[in-house]
Length: 287
Image (cartoon, rainbow, N blue to C red; front, side):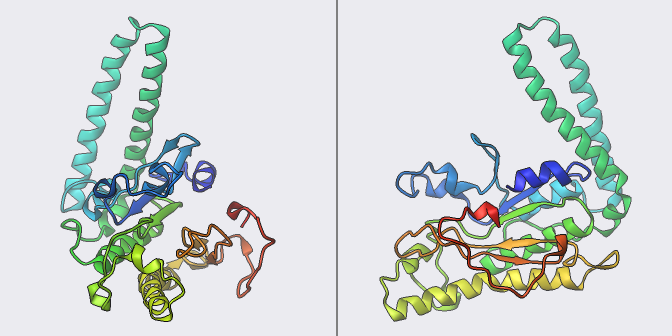
């Protein structure tokens, strides 16, 4: 559903949507829910029913996508000019190639050209946003060792992306399903997935609650930042709608529903401070 929204409101920004995560799934190949392709656990985003979108886990790579490489606005602008020159060169070469292709190869080439045009559009958008270049935050070194710092840094970059109107749609997979991450800073030595299979034992359910609260804490700070950032006649939060929810209803039984979902923000004149219980079987997208 995020891509449906992106097609409607994302074409006037540098990035129609941004997809980020924290866990490198390549170390968990084969660790998937029975009966489902691993693709459903490695991303939350799909460009089509059969085309998953990759999720970026490295804050430095995300920063360079958003602002370009370089430590100053001038260096970033120079990099963008270079990228545009490379694209011009590629397009001119393709015109010479196109005349000698059959219909099948021409179709593949047209798909490639669509990607090239999208990159070109993003570069043009980025170059017109001179204020964004001046206000870019310091470039991250890479993936922080601390999970908490990693999540907070990703949320900070997403907040800047909203503030600078680099994108109007984002998805953040804070933790992968079947996650084997441990949280010794919370006194939890068992992996997340093992804790979620609490078996109804009170002491394990307390651990699971502690872990869920820990995941919500940086999200709460992110919401606070949107609330305190002026935007037009209100705040960024007033003009945003953020959905937060889990991958399943009960991790212990792998129960798919009902899924609890929080909607936060003022976009769309949604009346807040309500708890709505939907009929059993209501599709999550109907929210």
